[in-house]
Image (cartoon, rainbow, N blue to C red; front, side):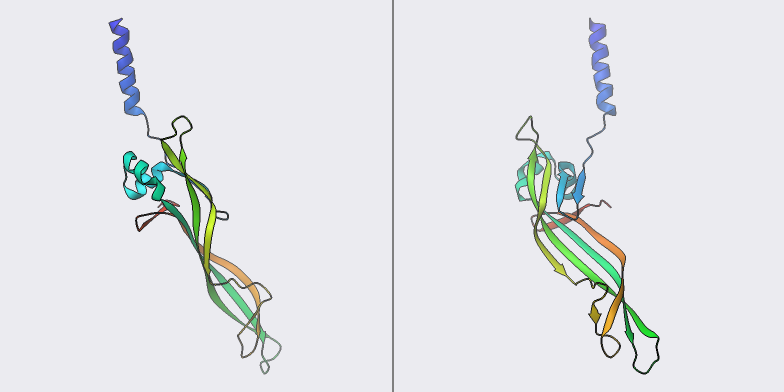
Length: 174
């Protein structure tokens, strides 16, 4: 019996040594603000242990931030320059900051153990810079020009966890 008990303890200890921690997870739909943030992502962001997360979870908020840059082409006919249209390119940046509704998610078996945060969509959206559309008019060429192309150049941003005046990027991870 002692032989089997010793083998059981040995196997248990070996399993404990090679077991890997549960990976944290963030899934977010940047178009709707819905998704899930695993508790580990928030703990890592703020350097909290499990007890600190349990205590502070109610004060955690989320913000989705993006900056999209577009190349906009304007064309216009010159009065004295002949039949060829003149063109000008410039960039337009559209910045968007959206507060995301979040609810603390609990383990179904233990209603006190936090598993993460359920993202329930946008609550407020602040946007700066408008994106011109093909066919819009613009103030170029000494008169009125027309937008003939709008091409995406770059997009940056991510989901931030906020607590106590601190804001930490949690998705995409760096």
